[in-house]
Structure formats: structure tokens, C-alpha cells
Amino acid sequence: MTTTLPFHRIAILGTGLIGGSFALAIRKQIPSVAIIGFDRSEAAATALTRGAIDKIAPDLATAVQGADLIYIAMPIAATIESLPQIAAAAEPGALITDACSTKTTVCKAAAEHFKNSARFLGGHPMAGKEHSGIENASADLFRNAPYALIATEANDDPRVTAFSSLLNAIAAQPIYTDPETHDWAVSIVSHLPQLMSVALARVVQDETDETGLPLSLSGPGLQDTLRLAGSPYAIWRDILLTNSTNISRALDRLSQAIDYLRTQLTSKEIQHEFEAANALYQLLRKQK
Image (cartoon, rainbow, N blue to C red; front, side, top):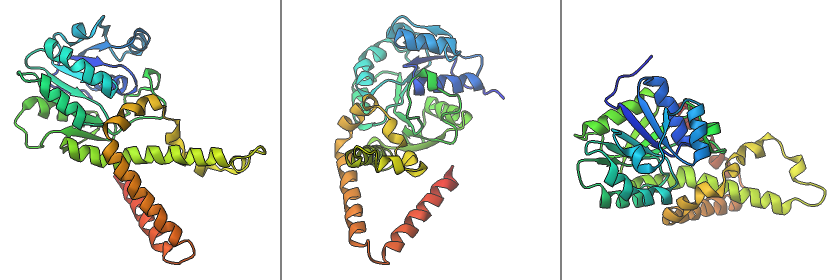
């Protein structure tokens, strides 16, 4: 099944896990669309080999020229640094969107540069893997995943509506929000779990002695809980820097919850915490 949408030439800036997966998903739905990629030579070459892109652009400006959809899938700092050049080279009617994990800083920077008819739309796919790179990209990465859009659902820009329809076509679930609300929300449901995994890994490492205990006694539960610990710091550096206030608050809330559990270890009242946790887990399962 193919989809017809008003995007004919798409520039993918950053052909790693997210950019590569987006390109593969679009290729699956719109085989005829032209997709131009820009990235480090090795990553771009792999994206070309995998069929995610049709052509490798020699530079960012060349990639952007003639594109009616520009998808930025680079780290936050690199995205912000690239915005002036993208704004200068973008077609007047183009839609520019990003996939950065925090939105307030990026959207403020974009507002300084996109003042003509080109439209910047902040975005964030809540999808990923602990292993990055085009090698791990998948056309189904966004399937059933929430996808934040920094806009109102009742917008009057047909380009935003078209992009939302494109997300629906690749089975992603658009959720409209503002930058500040987004950054608060992801600090709880994304950034906090990552740091929890890092902290748990530190405790296990520090407690493991020369005999290998307690690590050698661990079962699949620990591995499941530590899955996020496999995510590299390079991905998280900019996230932590640009959302530190929200993340600090999230850590405070977690600390409070842990302190409460400590006071209830010998009380039957702790059963209520398990029941609440079970209910939330079942709710998450129903959403998938």
C-alpha cells in the first residue's frame, strides 16, 4: 500500500538510527519520493546501500536545496548549529522539522532563523533503540510510537497537516504539545528511566565483588531493567544539558518515592504501591 502526499523531495540531515528509519519508513509508503541524505561519509554510504536514500549530498546546503521536506535527525547541539545554514538554503515553502529529544532550546533557536515562508515544526519521535546507527535502522521503528509535534492540532498550515498525515501513514501517533510541556513530560517518561538505569548499573557494579556476586546471580529481570544502560553518553549529553531543570525535578520526585518505600518496607501499606505500579504497567501494555 502506498501513500500520496505533497512531499516530492525529502532531505534527511543525519542518516543514523532515527533519520535512517524515517527514510526507510517513507520509502516503504511513498516509493517514488526522492530522498537526499547528508551525513558523515560512512553513515551516508551505508544509508545509500540500504536504500534509505537515493543520493548523498556533498554538503548541507546542497541537501536542502529543492527539498519541500527537510528532516533534521542530528544531535541537539549540531541541529542548533545547522539552523542558520538550513534557513538560508531552504526553499520558501519548505517544511523543516527536527527529531531532537528536547524542544524548548531548539524551538527558540529556530524562531530566530525561520522568519520567512519556510516553516519550522519541532518534532520528537518517542522511538529508538539502545544501539544507534544506520545499521540498526528499521522501517517499522516508528510503528505505534508517540510522535510529539510542537504545534496545535487545529493549525491552519497545510504543511503541518501533511506531515501529520505522513506520520499516520508510517503508523506513528502524532501528539500535539508546546515545547515546555514536552520537555517536562519527557523528563519523566524518558530521561528519568535512562538515569535510573545508569544509577542501578552503578550500584550493581559497586556491589559486585571479586567472586562475581551479586552480578553472577542475576536473572533476566536485571537485564531487562538495565536495557537503557546500553545507550551511549554521546546521545544523552545534549539532552541532559538542555533539560537539566526538568530532569533534576524528576530525580527529586524519584528520590521522594524511594524514601517513601524505605519507610514502608515492613508495612503492609507497601502493597498499595505494588498495586498502583501494576495498574500503570497494565495501562502501558494496553497502549501498545
